[in-house]
Length: 272
Image 1 (tube, one colour):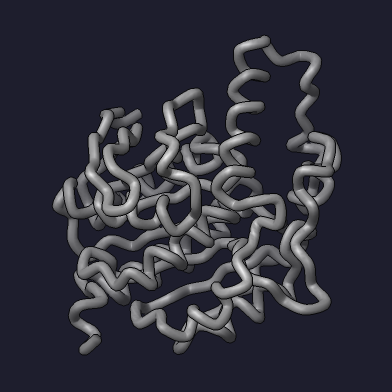
Image 2 (cartoon, one colour; image 1 turned 120 degrees about the vertical axis):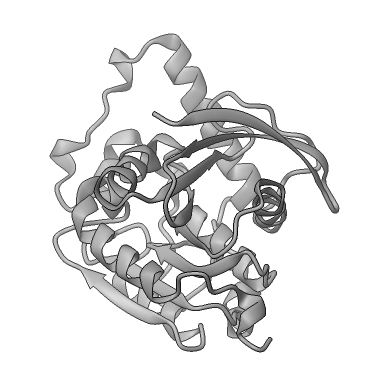
């Protein structure tokens, strides 16, 4: 299960932030950055990295998700990126492979732009955040839970959620997660400036995309990879927007191989 701690950070432009962090394993370090589905969307993949590869996996919960507090000054994706770079500094880990899904991928892209020497490589899994003409991000906030499943999974019937069966506390957490998602990403889940800024990423980058993703489609993913110098694009088959949940073994192999290829490497060693 790992150790869950509260990390108190001082972040420029934000102030004091408390982040709930799960830290498990003792091998090559990974930071897993969740999307709107919450920290539980990374939990099984974290266990897979630890149990099958012996990795060390650090999984933070975005403040405001999972009924955790969010300070008023923490209200953007860019600010969250600064929080997680500060977290890597405070935890004193080097050569970290940072993996983000959905808006977590957007956060990871912003982290890469900060050029922390702690980061050895970044992996964007069906990431949001950019604007691609003709390939809009689905209006997530207009979807019912059933529609979210339809758009997110290749095989949605395995993952449908009936909110009427949930305890009141779980519904309250989901509502808080949704509100925090809107605060961080806005209604559009994008930043018009991000696609152009991706050209400044200097750390090795892997972009992984599910062919059945209907939240951010395949051409959106290809545009994401094309905007990052030297990025590698890998297409996953018969999976959707959250492949680390739907087909975790498909994600595991390329992520592990990528991390191994860039082990111990930080952006400070790339000559930047």
